[in-house]
Length: 378
Image (cartoon, rainbow, N blue to C red; front, side, top):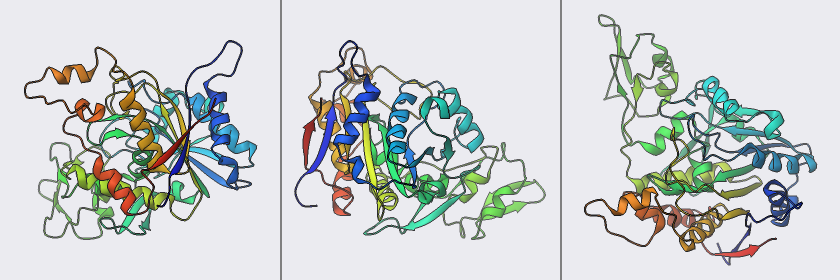
């Protein structure tokens, strides 16, 4: 993409009897040009992470409400959304996911809009979207409600990540909007594994398999994988209510990053989209963890842009410039045998992670621009 993309940002400073962070966020998104999007009478998906149970670094509902208030002022019909997780936890189906969101404070009253789990009850309600310019993903499996929306807004908590170095807009969109099968496609290059001790022999997974990749052992009343036929689509994962089916996360991080960029492209291509990153409580790992460790750096600020890559790169750069907090995971890493400091906050925090392939591939497929102009808003 030619030229530089504009990224607007503000800090968390407030004055007595002045605007709080939620009002500052409203001013920021207006300054960044959200008003240029026609939302009148349109369904607007606000994609965010509701936090795993036990985690407290996820974004407060107040930020979601600020965004939804602006959307409604523009005549839009906002809803908060996320897709179910690939792994067992408290968000692997819509019922558990909704209870988790409610427990973490996301109700229509507190967050300004209803919560809709985009890929349905079991994570199987998705649509296949061809990726324009895609090289690794032919058809991205995206939660149906995300694609049914007329306008898409990403509201992401910017933080560290154990695989991709950091998580921001592109991860919130690409990985977050993938159905359970979509997440499987991004994470895995292989086939499912069935734990016989957990399999109940219900055969619900068999009904989801279109490739004769599963076989039922009537004598043992257990399901098995036919490795000759299985294509690794991940449909069986969402069908199992007992966590008997899993996939090894064996995709190389570079491949994961490239697939994630292509999934993000599938979500935002051919419709209006807008992106917000909140760089606050910058935890060392993903909000999918049932815990959150001490923040790596002090709170940075709020960012808004039409470019999902530029906003991520800007957040990364601001975090790199920030002083490191004491007594964090990063300090523990430095004590490990064989640790080699790079000076990169996110790579030093998670030495097995990598993010440059994400940036390079996002540029390659036209998802965004790594060059940006940072505009500060009071």
